[in-house]
Image (cartoon, rainbow over all chains, first blue to last red):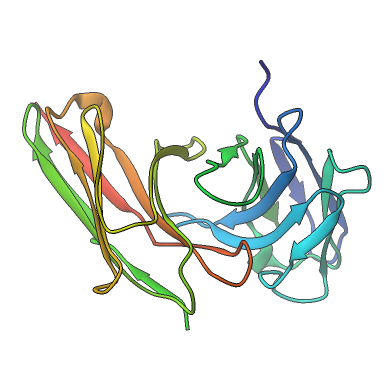
Amino acid sequence: GAGVSQTPSNKVTEKGKYVELRCDPISGHTALYWYRQSLGQGPEFLIYFQGTGAADDSGLPNDRFFAVRPEGSVSTLKIQRTERGDSAVYLCASSLTGGGSNEQFFGPGTRLTVL
Amino acid sequence: GQNIDQPTEMTATEGAIVQINCTYQTSGFNGLFWYQQHAGEAPTFLSYNVLDGLEEKGRFSSFLSRSKGYSYLLLKELQMKDSASYLCAVRDNYGQNFVFGPGTRLSVLP
């Protein structure tokens, strides 16, 4: 079956612009996570959805970052007034449920470059 | 605060055994995960520990000691394709916040 997909695979934007990054989780997975990863570092947790609601958004760095999952499937990460420091690979992952040993399946990521 | 430490880089020889250590200090604990990440690719799940002890899965084993805040990943019969970064991650108690370590870049030499 299809894995987690993310679009676009690459996004180049200018400082100050608005961007949207999309994640399509594995069908039937109720838990969805967003991370960002800089070169040579581990993924940094941003937000976790259980169904349609953001169960934990403690990793969002500031109010320029926002994510939605209106129908409990596809999620969009939105970044306003982008800054050069936002440049990273943004990873999405989904799991069947949020607890226990349920492994997260990661998408290929969106590489965001802010010029 | 949340902190996970791993060695930055390790080198081993094909066919050998390597142990990658991970120590953690987190506000809560609800499971420890190991992931493998090849360069330019997404992480893939290797193992999960929530109770103390050793979990074995083929050539890979993972150990956890909650009292010491310590885990290791053991890779046996190393193959060239095992060259990758290995990420240790802890899920904290209060939600689903996953804290990842910086990763250990393993190079397997012929």
